[in-house]
Length: 212
Image (cartoon, rainbow, N blue to C red):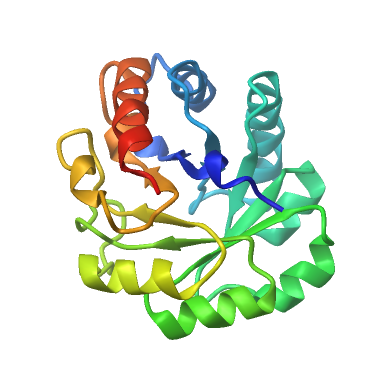
């Protein structure tokens, strides 16, 4: 289960923004100090063994702030690192299969870009949805923009909470008002900023006014 307040400011990691003098753990710590309410560890180019090692390190940080750690795409890593949950795309493991492996105690998020996908995810046992790319994105070359009207249709069609994702920054986050979201999943709007802590604090204030 998930408390929808945990989706308010959902930080999604991206190593490409880190410098030689800063580790990913350093960046995540600064985001946590800024008040992010959930962290997703996304590692697209890492071996399973290294992914598990990284997850264990980030999990310790998240636990110290009482913030859930979600693993992107990889159920095996979630299990072996004892993370709080997993986020799966439409081309990843089926939500029902993931639930069998993870049990009822773990969080499962599903990417949903249509009302039909949202319904299937909820019926399959998902705890929350991630929907976008609401403002486009620089982190996924194949991501298509999701019209605000479609996002509102998705949030209205399900009882589980929905986080908007895709190009969300402090400059545009207020435009999400009235769409029924529980929060925003943010990548570069947090991790590409020089002052990660300040960026997270600002975004959290905005999302507190925007989230339904």
